[in-house]
Length: 280
Image 1 (cartoon, helix red, strand yellow):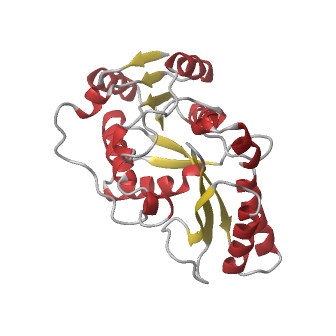
Image 2 (cartoon, one colour):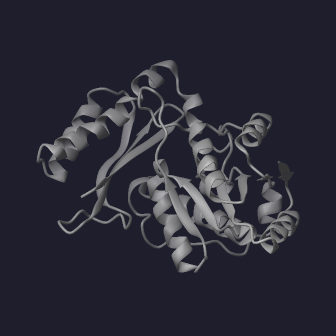
Image 3 (spheres, rainbow, N blue to C red):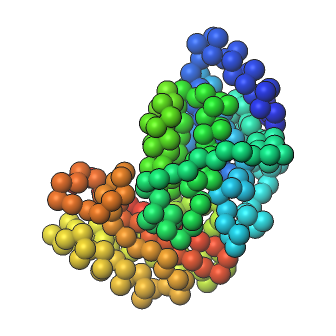
């Protein structure tokens, strides 16, 4: 595995790979890798000649009162995990390398961002879209891999690829969970002991929604049952608990083929998200 921190160097080595007709699988991350990230790398490893991951904690997607400084970082650990997972190139740029001294343009997302996480994190997905647009133009991957835990982000990435005509295949990978159901996240390490004990009820509440649907409840009825269940089992603040069509994230209609039920809970210093996507 080669670690690269300069954009031009990464472009040069990947140009050589493309000259060999090698496909490139790309996994963008903010680091502090866990089994969820490793599952993305595994998917990329199975379908591509070359696997590239990026580790970059992007300041543009953090609001002024969010956890940019607290976001966990451990490059030595990440390097070992990436190497053992079969990564070929690890791109580890600085903020200066990615954005320089002067930034004149950002990407503005006009749809799919006024609900769920976008509603309480204004500007977040503009930051995500800006850094991903830059990374896609740097890496030029054949395929890019994202975990469906961040389902709204996946919907935004789909829009980026479509609207900018990137010749990239987007692969969404199922959520990886702890044995008790908690979705894997780099932020889980910042939960207090009590918060960690109750956090699995987030997923259990989503399972409650699914069970209600299977019993014949309407999406609205199932959503209400799930929210009541979650409220009675946690002390964290529920930011949202919503059901929407997917991937356009509009109101559910009788014509929808896929819907998403998504939840976010704010704890002392950690915000957890989770979802289930249901095919109708």
